[in-house]
Amino acid sequence: MGELQSALDALATEDVHALTARQQLDGIRQLLELRNRIDAQLTRRVRTAELQQAPEDDGQKSMRSWLRGHGRLSSAAAGQLVRNGRALDHLPELASAFAEGAMTAEQVTVVAPVAKESRRAAAFQQGIDLAEIDRTLAAVAAEHRIEQLSRVVHHYLSRLDPDGPEPDPTDDRSLTLSTLSDGTVVVRGQLDAVGGEKLKTALESVVHADRPKGDERSRAQQTADAIVQLADNQLASGNLPFLRTVKPNVVVTIPADDLFDPATAPAAATTAFGSLVSAAKARMLACDGSITPITIDEHGMPLNMGRTKRVSPPHLRKAVELRDETCVFAGCGAPKYYCDVHHLVHWIFGGETSLENSALLCERHHTKVHHGFSVERDPDGRWRTFRPDGTEILIAQPLLV
Image (cartoon, rainbow, N blue to C red; front, side, top):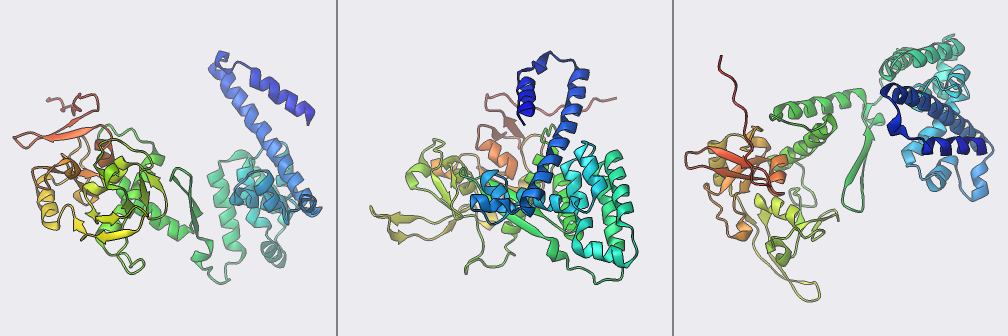
């Protein structure tokens, strides 16, 4: 271990910026192989410690709980590391390839279901040589991409018990939403093949319906925006089940002083699920939302609750949709059912809730406009978009041939 630490110390002092492109790639390839070998030794030791019941020495019930507490791993990562160790007990060829750096921990995770007790028993009953399966999967893992390895494993498992009962797809579904201290939501989960196909189909439809010119978002950002858009669409449709006797809405509570103050005011507003957001974000939501004024006494107790008022009434939204048809931000054109009604001059600062003071903006560009960008409508009806520095975003016209 001391020699390994010394080698890592030496690597940390190397001037990687002085290396050529070829040297960089060769070095990365070597590091990947070394990481695989380290992961293999970690997996082997975790399995051995589990067999020895070593976590009891630190007062922990299981190796998984020890990894969470002492290794600061997530529950999912700790569980998978333990399962990989158990699987490799029955797959010596894979274990050897892993130890030599020829395959990754992620590939081991893909193959691990093959070694479950029920599947080993099914293979034995059908006269399948598990050692041959082990050799084949090790070869595939060493020579092919992980997607192909996954298909090979799925092909094997699906034919291991072709006449067995059709599994319940919901058994393989899980989803957790974890909220960080700044309100950011981390999404983790998995879906069965059919459920995943439904989600991917829905997300693709949203991604391809909103591809404005000059869109520099990564694929991951496009997919994340699509999930938010799906939620927006469902909330706007009014077809979701009642939540605690009322239709589900995004609820944000903010003191009036912060709402009417033009400053950004970080952590000024509180969402229904306890996250803190800025006054700027609250004002964006208030641009096309419903407002319920509540008077609070000095002890924080409600004294009076006014009537909830929809900022942009349905008849005004219809008129704005008829005029604008799509998001008016330069180069966008997202469909009207993706859009909010934005106040050009916010009603909080005296702007009228009128057709002349309204514009259709998709969720992404509505956010942009509340963070420095702006849109204006010329007397001739043409929309113009400006950057925070005041320069106009112009769409190049096609050349005439």
